[in-house]
Image (tube, rainbow over all chains, first blue to last red; front, side):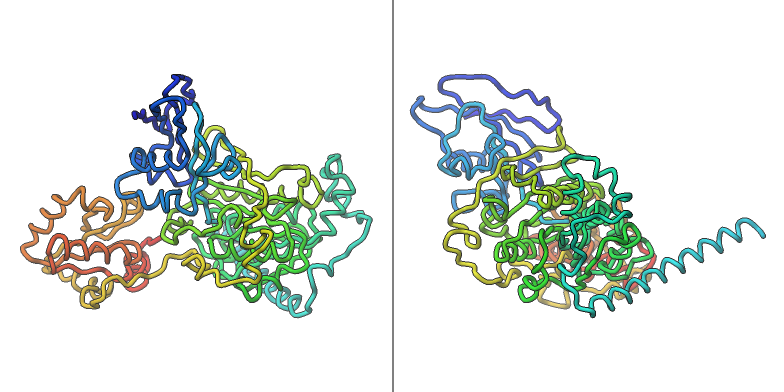
Length: 123
Length: 440
């Protein structure tokens, strides 16, 4: 697995690279979530190799993977709890609430964009 | 008369008039509250008065509103919970646009640190009850709007009684516990909830419990751990951000009251100062059949203890921690002031706040090493302590919380026991020692 990292100041061109056995997934962090991420990045593009076409990448595995690749040292507990995201983090898959898409059972597709947003309580 | 003298006199008179206005409004508010009206006792008719036609004419010209829509606004009652950064613009717009009855709930008083965003309040109203201050702003703006002030902390015991009779509820509060409380009460009373939130540079807006859409609990069945919740007083907020969200909350209320909202699918609007575009809309799930409060077989049938549920109560202010068990490890600001004013008292004053806060204000001769960077800057810390020749270290922060953790670190990890926490921090310094110190 490899990942390329971009900051919030980078261009917004979505990766279009397509490979039969490689998924390009963009992970985005906002609403304060970025403070849990290495170098406070707001956007990280991941190129994830799969063994073969028939091995699906499910959301649960992807979250665990992000916990290792994107989340800053010592902050994993504030991102992952009980194999899912910790309460208070919204997950948005291609601009849709992840519950609509099956939550942890969602199968990621090439060029998906997954956003992690902290819920805000202030006012 | 001398011009400058006259200017001074006019300014002083305005100050007096502004203070008097608040006093009169407070008395009026108390009398009206005692009169025991309900949200529904406002005028309810199918015609607009001539002064209403004149005032709302620009709105009447829009086909989406027209006379029909305007009458709906006029004959409606909206409750705004919280008259802070979100509630200020929301209430101002609702009153200005012609909502007939507006309820306001808040238990707090106006503070100077509110004014950059809570634009319904004024310099003159600092120290006054927020609902009285807000009411003053609204009655100046539109005397046709009937304002009902609830100067209480909304809780499990009074929430349903307060919400009863309103058509729409606006959540403009600042904490998780009250958000769950208002959500559950709205579900129980079948009221739509217009929920907004804002911290730092980001805002969020959703209409809950309406037309088959989700409630707040459908989206967030479990409250976030208390220590992950950011508040405006701790992490800051750009004034206009809650202004944007609060104004949009007023717009959503109009859509609910005129019926327009019924044709829209459930969504959450995300706003950020730093994103391009600034706004994005996320499609939300429908009502969740398994939701604890609005689901098919609800387990939450009465309002519960929300402070216990969330692990933190309805208070935006940071709690005072007691991490250091031994009171001898803590030094009061007054004591430190005495020690430091004696020039011969060799010591190190270590300010453990982040650089941004250190730049706002600091005590003279303090060394700034943020507690988050202790591990990274350990060498620097050890050198500074090594140079002391055994003299004491005093750790200071904003309120005396992080400084206790710093003392723990210095004692346990660096093995330097001659270290103390400045109890009360810089806020305490301002209160106990130097009222002119610009604590925040």
